[in-house]
Length: 632
Image (cartoon, rainbow, N blue to C red; front, top):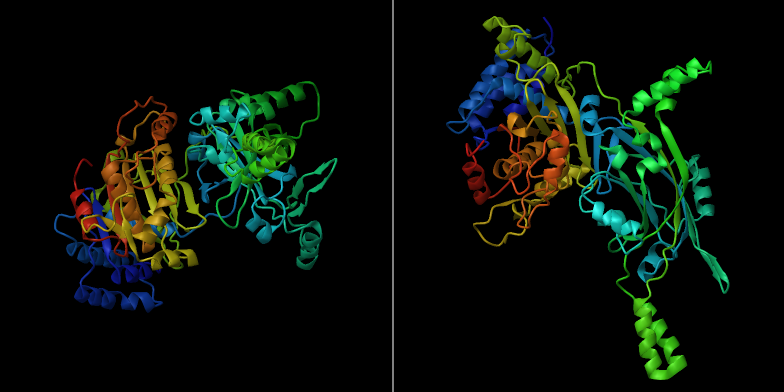
C-alpha cells in the first residue's frame, strides 16, 4: 500500500471542465454544479488526508469521476480514459520548463526551442553552430534625433546571425553582390536565427567599470563614441561583456549552409534598423562542416595520430576537441539597407550646389545628394564553433512524464492504469497491437518551445513506434501569462476579417496573440517529428493543455482541423501562406512534396483540454462544431 498522488489532480478536475474533442471535435462542456459538488465531496478526504490510499482504490475513484464527467459531455463525444490519463500527464508536464542548456535554439523573434531528444534533434539537423560576438568597430553615428537623446550619440548595436539553407538563396545573393539589403531582417522565413545582447551607446567604459565593481561581477557591455576631425577619424566601437552568452543555431545540410550576419541598431522608438550585413559559407570558416561524415573523419584523425605514436587525449573532453572546430576573427560588413530618409543629404547637396552655381547648381546638388547612399561602415568580431551531431544508433529510452505540479504523479497513475488493463485482458507490454498502451517504449520529449514576450510555451512529444505526435500547451504560471489571461477583448479568428461583423468568428485577443507568437514554429517541429520516409497522414496528433494551455490547445486544434498543418503562416489569415512548408516537409520526410497541394494533415486529430476558459464567440463555436468529423 502506498500513497498515490491522485487527489490533487482530481480536485483540479472537479472544479473545472474536461474538454473532449476528437475531430470529430467535441465542444468542451462545463460540469453542472450538482456534479461539481458531488465530485468535491468524493475527493475531499483524498485531497486533505495523509492516509495511504490503495492503488486500486485510487484508480477506481479516478475512473468513476472521469466517467461522471464524460457523461455530461455532449452526446456523441468520444472519451477514452487511457488517452485522458496520458494527456493529463502531458498537460501538467508542460509546466516543467527545461533547464538552461546548449540545446536552446534562441531565435531573433523571441522564439526559443530547447531540443530534448538526441534522436529527434539528429533527425532534423546534422550540426550545431555556436556563435559569440566580441566587438563591433567603425560604426556610424545615430541619425535619429530622438534616439540620440534617449540612448546616446552612437547606434545601439546587437548582432543577428542566421543559417540559410535553400529558401532565401536569392536574398543571400543580393547581400553577396554588395547591393542594398536588409540582411537577416530581410530573410523571409528563416527560423535559424540567433541574437546577441545590445550594447547601449550611452554606457561608456567608465560607467560599465563602475557597475561591475559595485555588483562584483565581470565587465558589462560598453560603447566608445566616434571621434571625427577634418582629416577623418574613427567610428563608434561596441564591446560585449566577457560573460556574453553564446547562442546556438542548427544546420540540416552544413556543407551547403551559408551564414548571414547583421549588425542591427536597436531603437527605443520605432523599428530597429540594420547597420550592415555580411555573408560567409559555413564550410569556408569551419571546413569540418563540409565533411560528409565529420564524426568518422575525427575518428580517423585520432587513429592516424595513434599510429604515428603521437600523444592523444582519449578522455571525453579530448575526443570532443577533435570533433569541435572553431574560428575567430573579424568580418567586414559588406552591405546595408537603402536609405529611405535622405532629407539631410539632399539639403547638404543643394546648399553646396547653390554656392557654386546658384539655383541650377542647387537643383543638381539636391539630385546628387538624393543619389548618395554613403559607404558601408563597420566590422564585427565574432567566434564560431561547429559541433557535428552524431547519428543516434541506440534504442530510445522511454520518456517518463513528470507531474509538473508538486504532489501530482501523472506518469505513475498512467502506469497503474496500464497494469490493470493488461492484467484484465491477459496482454503483456510486448505483444504489439494487443497492448493497450497508446504510446510505445520509444516515447520522446522532442522539444520545448517558448516565446519571450508572450510567454506562450508548449512541449512536443512523439512515439515513432505508435506513429503518434502530441503537443501540450503550458497553462498560467508567469506574470506574462496573467496579462494574456486578462486581455479579454475579442479579435477576428482569421486575421484580416472584419471583427465588427456579428457573423465573424472572434476569439480572445490575448489567447490569439500568445498562440500566434509560436504556432508557425510549432508546426515546423511537428512536421519534423515524422520519421524520415513517413508521411504526416500516417500519424495521430494529440493536442492538450491545462487552464490557459487548454485555451491555446483549443485554438491550435481548430486551426489544424480546418487548414491542416500549414507551416507557411502562424494562425489563419486572409493573406496567402508562404509555401515554404512544401520544401520543409520534403527536407524532413526525405520525400519530394509536389507544389500547389494543400498542407499535410494527420491521420487523426484529438483534443483533450483541462480547465480551459471560453475562447471565442458563438460564431467561433459554430465553426468549431462544424469541424467535428470532417475529413479527419
